Image 1: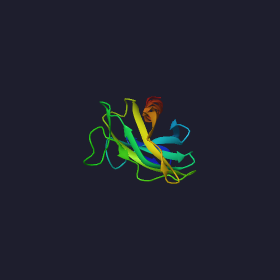
Image 2 (image 1 turned 60 degrees about the horizontal axis):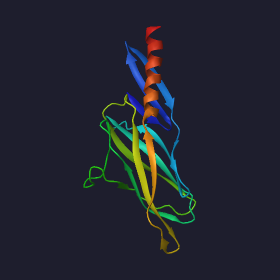
Image 3 (image 1 turned 90 degrees about the horizontal axis):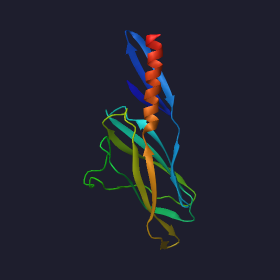
Image 4 (image 1 turned 180 degrees about the vertical axis):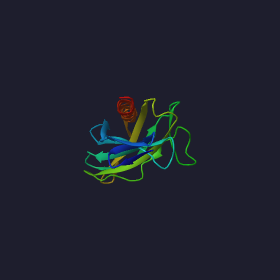
Length: 169
């Protein structure tokens, strides 16, 4: 069984009547940045839905205005697909559910279905946003990023090594 508590992925296994637990600490990693916005993220396992991970993304406004109309998109791979709201095109972006006033930060979560957690992915994505200063709205800005699932992959490799040492030594 596997679940997440704060910033730890916790895994519990019962093998031949022996209870083994394992924790891996996960912290927020840089995702992308430009002069206006800074993005960090961490991946979490969704304990209530099999084969699903959640990317918690922190959006930090570095601009002199308000960030508005933020759209987050990650291209699907053969193994990993972003969960989009009903009615959204297969490769469509998701509107971030808030605006960011100057100097503030907020977090949003995006779910992904994963066929194999053991296959690390480097998923390409974009954040498109506008900046509103007074009553003037800028044209759309884009920030490109790569979301890596290798953090979870490393956690599972550590678990495999730990279990092999515990069980076979």
